Image 1 (tube, rainbow, N blue to C red):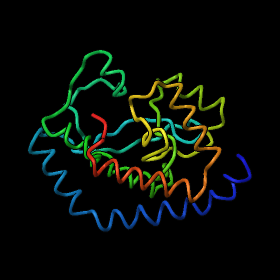
Image 2 (image 1 turned 180 degrees about the horizontal axis):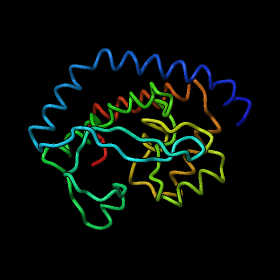
Image 3 (image 1 turned 90 degrees about the vertical axis):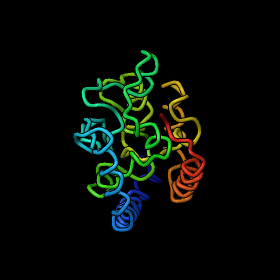
Length: 196
């Protein structure tokens, strides 16, 4: 890890946990409403759990509100689009467009598995992304709820370009970069630019 990233890491972790705790405390009514809406729309688990690559590609379980029907294959959004699959529940596209499906990841941040800002956690089968992150040093970062690639292209970017933008984030990691990414994320959410 670069000296810059290493020096920032303790502050980043504290900042992440503080904001995640505040978010959970303030947004619990939203959690309840979304959970009830998901269950009424498509009875079953309201949370989606999936193994993802964490820091140094160590697997962890990511938490999201469920937006897809039960039994959906564990593929990336990009792969499902390529295969012509549309397994969303009626509520799913709206949850993804508003990014409300990502809220449970605040628990991942509180547990230290994720950061508010960082490279999005890849599926363990996304070899191009994982190999690229290993080669560029991005694997040393905790994955984020949002990141530079998400605010500058999201799932529309090819894997190689996502890795390049993750590497750009690594080279400029710091409080100013994180605040800017968070501001652009909020702006994107308010404009309804979530992925679906």
